Amino acid sequence: MNPSWIQIALAEQGQSELSGGKHNPRIVTYHSVTGLKAKDDETPWCASFVGWCLAEAGLRGTGSAAARSYENWGVFLDKPVLGAIVTFTRAGGGHVGFYMGQRDGKWLILGGNQNNRVSVAPYDPERMTSIRWPANVPLPNAVAPLSKSGVIKGNVVAATGTVASIGVGLIENSDQVNLATGWIKEGTTIAIILGLVALAGIAWSILSRVQGKKAAGD
Image 1 (cartoon, helix red, strand yellow):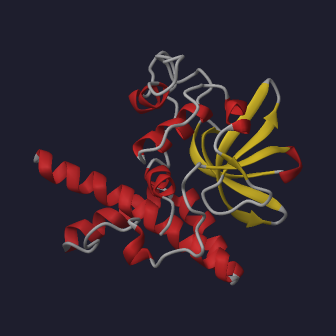
Image 2 (cartoon, helix red, strand yellow; image 1 turned 120 degrees about the vertical axis):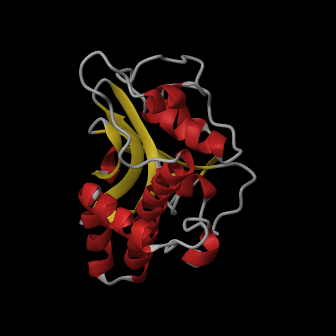
């Protein structure tokens, strides 16, 4: 089964900092799982995002807003696997996110505070400082079929109106869609799987918003 924290993280793609004096309440929620409990979206929040995703999956993070606090968390891995928590050096501190694969010699990381938003972005593996995995969680032998992974929940195609809304949402998330389709075009098994998982996560996120609006009567 695909890591539950990755399913959760994928659904958060697109959450971003707000300009001016406003703060994205979702990012403030990420901060709530740390001891710092920052009340803005400007305080570095990559570790807060990782901690929140883990907490939503029923796991305990470091409780710290410092990215490199994850260097000694969980158990050590000598090679990255899908969903592993990876720490990196970065000017002024560090960075932490979830490993999603490789492309053109770079490691693809799903994380928060990447260009001020939740996204998948390439990182130089030479900047990596540690690869970690949650203690007491078995390593995945293979990626489960999407229908059983939890990435797709329920019947995605519920009605014509829902399909249209998903189409609009895919356009709004064109950067993530382009990245996912790029993986699929690579043709390797892992790249195709990662691309399908990413597309499914985007669709699930869009569908969840559509269903939420319907429930609210919008």
